[in-house]
Each structure stands twice: as structure tokens, then as C-alpha cells.
Length: 103
Image 1 (spheres, rainbow, N blue to C red):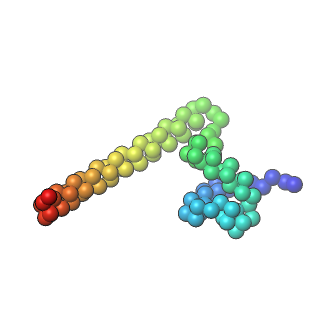
Image 2 (cartoon, rainbow, N blue to C red):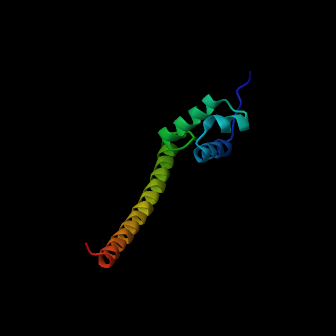
Image 3 (cartoon, rainbow, N blue to C red):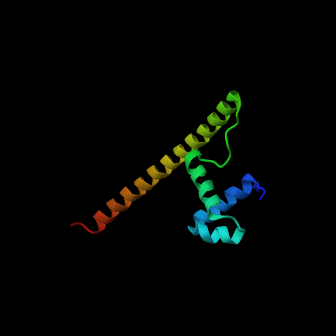
């Protein structure tokens, strides 16, 4: 039996569907993929953050890792700002609640 190669886009789409439905077996049956293959893809995604392997050449690997680090840092900063905004909203709502309903 020949080993089937799946495109990166297809793998990422399947992982996204799996995370949305939270049912690996169902998505595997729909796409006629062995569930163990999907578990392998999910494990690889969790370990490396991507289903795409890093390049073999050191220089290219470093550039790719730096690019990934920059993306993660940007996302982290965005999420920190979002959390700060939510905490501010919560504190304002708590103050309003306390003013309206003093204990």
C-alpha cells in the first residue's frame, strides 16, 4: 500500500475541523483518514506549533524560527492588551455594581 501525501492546507483544515467538533473519529470517517493519522497530526501541531517541518539548512531554519517567534510574540502582545482591556472593563463594572448596591 502506497503512503498517501496530504497537503499542508488539507492537514490544517482537518485539524481545525477536529478542534471545532472535538471529535477526531467523526472527522476521520468523513474524510476517510485513519484516526491514528489525525492523532499524529495533532501531536505534531501541539509539539511544534505547526504541521510543517522546519527546513534542514541551518540558516533557513534560523530564519524560519525567528519568523515564527516574531509571529508568536506579536500574538502574545495582542492577547496581553486584550486581557488588560477586559480586566479594566471588569473593574469598572465592579465599581458600578458597588455604587448601585452598597453592602
